[in-house]
Amino acid sequence: MNVDVSLGTRSYRIVVASGALATVGPRLRELSVGARAALVSDGAVARLYGKTVMASLESAGFTVATIEVPEGEGAKTLAIAQHCWNELLAAGLDRTSTVLALGGGAVGDVAGFAAATYMRGINFVQLPTTVLAQVDASIGGKTAIDHPLAKNLIGAFHQPRLVLVDPAVARTLPEREFRSGLAEIAKHGIVLEAEYFAELERDVEPLLARELGVLERIIGGSCRLKASVVERDEREAELRHVLNYGHTIGHALEAVTGYARFAHGEAVSLGIVAEARLARRLGVAGDETVARQERLLEALGLPVRAAAIDVEPVVGAIARDKKSKDGRVPFVLAPKIGAFRLVYDVPAADVRAVIASLGS
Ligand SMILES: NC(=O)c1ccc[n+]([C@@H]2O[C@H](COP(=O)([O-])OP(=O)(O)OC[C@H]3O[C@@H](n4cnc5c(N)ncnc54)[C@H](O)[C@@H]3O)[C@@H](O)[C@H]2O)c1
Ligand SMILES: [Zn+2]
Image (cartoon, rainbow, N blue to C red; front, top):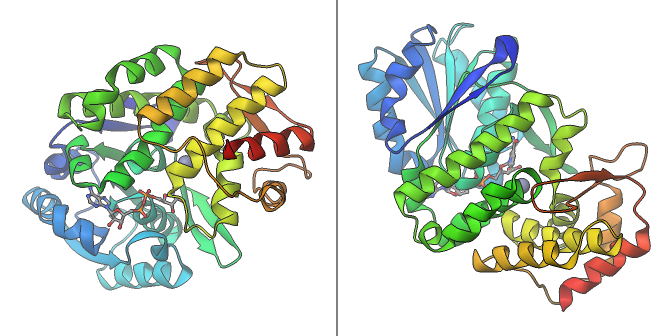
């Protein structure tokens, strides 16, 4: 399945196909870029898939430097970005060269940031290997490193030239990491397309069994939905906020638990439950719309309840949300499956009530 992201001169293709990683060399050649490239990855992903990617690039005539970054969020620091710039320079990359990110969202974010800033921006290719990165982080051109005081604070918009999604690699993900990525997939269905949501409800079992054909169809569908939002709002003026469904409360839950208790997707799942209930409380959505969301998340093995959540710190963290405008935090609400509405000025008492409700 191919998804074309239409952004004028910054347009690119997302290829979703089993075995796609082994085709990166010829596909990059088609873009008429220079012969030098750098492959950024963490040690674990490099051991699993580095050889396949290197072999394809080299047999297509590319000279490729490899850059290893730490696993996980530890890759998204100024020091690691600096390390990447040093290596790009040492390998002689110029403005026609390409940086490729092979890994999860963290590798994609730091490699993308290095590509966006080196020589004011060079070619960038995403080779996402987690479900989260495949359906979310690799699409849309957001790149960033963390500031000691806030995640993703320092960054740039820099669209990739190509995104190669190989659903087969999802089969080596640890169970918790895999399920965490499914929260973004559920999110896309809830706020963007009822048909896709129904497909998820139907395919829970083969999806959890990671059947290749189902992975390809579901991951491809999610890429299509995210791409359609990015096309209509590249710079997150307003529409792109829809992708923040479940994240306003989800991010706050992650922050107050020190990014240690919940995987990102688990926090998003709880955030979706709370924000679905918020919609019902505000008279925006009915019972069945809320119940369907909880049922799907639970079936996907994601948490829909959490004990011992202290409400006040969560409310405080929401107020500090990066998405707030003049101190007002927008909530994305789903009036029904496949639709959304942006709501400002949600009464704090209602937010408190739905966070408290997560305990039961
Ligand atoms: N730029 C964006 O638009 C955007 C969107 C969402 C999230 N993000 C960012 O993405 C990051 C989270 O990304 P993530 O959830 O992909 O986690 P991650 O990048 O931290 O990777 C998680 C772990 O999975 C391992 N791994 C990756 N692929 C594997 C595979 N196929 N098999 C086995 N192990 C594998 C990695 O080695 C790593 O240890 C956060 O930093 C977040 O801010 C960015
Ligand atoms: Zn997310």
